[in-house]
Length: 338
Image (cartoon, rainbow, N blue to C red; front, side, top):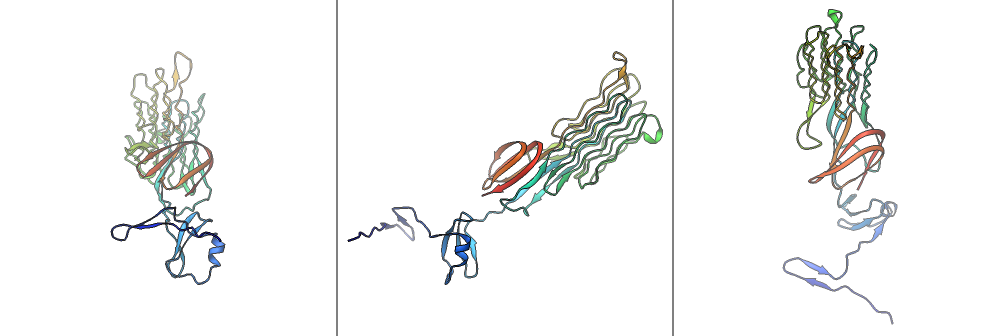
């Protein structure tokens, strides 16, 4: 004779109960679930396809636990490198920040971190940085700073493009500060005002003093405290002892003729490179201009989800109920799963 095994059920105060063994619901795949007949409101199963409990509400099956995949993103393009010779500072990379709830689970999305543009050498033009990307959200590159032999370049045209490069020193029409990004603004002759999803323009170079680079955009997604991204580089100066332009936060400063080289933008902040001041007497060569700082992609999402990436250099930290993924290099993919 077979033995009927049963669980012992204990009743406590109120409506609380307990059982000796784990409570196990009947398991179905999604296909098997959809083939069920006679389901009534309140019926509960374990769906092995979605790996979650589901209940029938009288009309459809609903996940018992279905959190929203809400992703906050920061996408910063690479800053540009300034031209060699006496030149203007370069524009910072574009800054694009926001929140999306439109992405699906178990789906790969493209991520690219743009490198900073190299500095020009031997009186050559600078080099634009590279745009960064997360899915359809872009941080464009900045424009490079001009020199006495050429005008500055303007930024790429994606939404969130970086600032334009500052002009060189020879012709009066080149002595202008770089434009700001497509969603920002910068003032000629001074530090740019804070931009809104656009990098700061590079400061122009003049014979008397270099202009400051435009301000970038502050964002607190990574640390909880505001950090500045996408600032423009300062302009170089041809006059010995003259004052070079300062770069915005995390961008390069301008150089001084025969005295000091310009500096580069900080990596992963998208700052533009500082403009060269011209020849260095000790080296009998053109003083170095600054390279652009590389961009960055930062993603913040709930702890309930697991992020998988491929082809990317990243670090992950936890802050309360959220994970923060900082991607510093590479081109690859990112996907989320429960």
